[in-house]
Image (cartoon, rainbow, N blue to C red):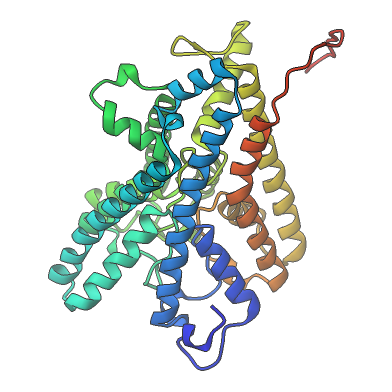
Length: 418
């Protein structure tokens, strides 16, 4: 990204700008400190596409293969249970898993690009070459949840165009739901009763959070003149749905996020922190982690001895893993927000929290302050993007692999809680 050929104007990009952009692409985040369509050349845009594709493919395969590693470290009983919960992925060879991931990515991106190409060509009078190129670029960004766009306003100009928004929504959802879930749905979509606990949590959690985000966005922004206010009713519904899905980690925006009401900003920040499904291109603490914590709280409030989901008792080790991942995420976001607040002057706290959460959860949505941050704050966001992208996978796997059985137990003690 520092090569002179990657920049539209003469000279090369500064180190921090190139580092931030490369990290944002590889971590499939989409945050940018420059205007992507005008600052980078065609060669630079191709680099962004390649980096986003490599990042998305690497993340999905790494997460899937690490799940295989975890299952193979278990005993026979644990491996059988893990195999049942991962829809048979633990039994296949690594090459077959990689080919399946690549096939899913290629088919999804091709389908999205085909629809976008026809729309750009026929409705917006793009030349065939430009229509194909921009369709492929945005299809790759959508499925990999990267969020870079070839327009200065992201996708605001297409806010009322369902032929642009809906294919990109499909790509973001397909990429953020996770390969194990996609594979199981392809085989068992007619029999929801046979779905694994992981697939049920991911699918129904995605539906629940999507409905919640859609309704709250529509209600809070309906009359906001800076976002949904000037639009007609169908366009408002489409914009609210699009923006809600993009909080999964998509990164595109069809309204100006800098004009969101404070209530919408808070809800969007929370949805970004939760993120998408495990073993996907989405970030955040993941939907399964969030719902597991909800079930743990519900069981504790009811005085239940076990956490049960759909007639399946959740292991105590899994509960502790979910708590650890969530609390580490909270700690990183809190520390990052305080650090960003200390490194900047004049950035409101809610904006700082929004940007830090977007970087940690590799979402890429921004209220417009990222480009104006000092270099030290931009480097901080680079670290958060990397830790948020790699850390959630490796920490979760490390915790699972570090599970040990002691031959003794210490006496029990009950400190006062609350």
